[in-house]
Amino acid sequence: MKRIAVFPGSFDPITKGHEDIILRAVPLFDEIVVAIGTNSSKKYMYTLERRLEMIRFTFRNEPKVKVDTYLGMTVDYCREVGATHLLRGLRTSADFEFERSIAHINQTLYPDLDTVFLLSLQEYSAINSTIVRDILINGGDATRFVPEGLDLTV
Image (cartoon, rainbow, N blue to C red; front, side, top):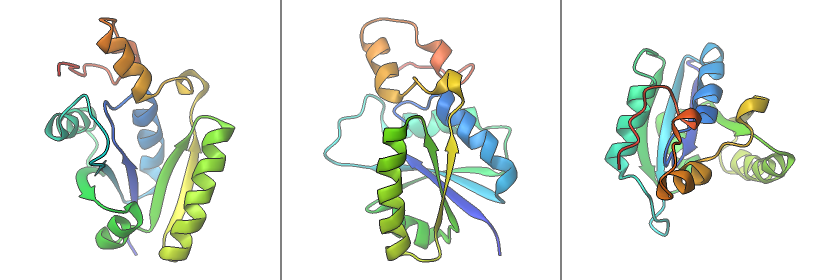
């Protein structure tokens, strides 16, 4: 059986923390689908197409990483693509408590799906997309928080 992991998120924008979790997970799976979920109630800085571009650029040399988008519940998308695992990064104990609850619900809804948690490296634990957007909105330089060479033009 092919081991397919889905790494869901909004990636608005992708950060070095996201990149690190995905690259560290590559040896564990046959394929990792970086899946951009669409939430109609959320206001994004980058268009969906731009976020897809940024992720494709980041993993352009990693053939095991695919990029896709989805609507609806993540667990339904996982079932649709035949995922065996849901990949999640943890920065804090609060992340763990939140993600654990979701993992239990997902396990109930889709018993063939296991959630795999990877702890963020210490140097990335303070980075998140919201902070990167705030830096950019206020005219700051966020390049040290995103994958190398990533164009942050909106």
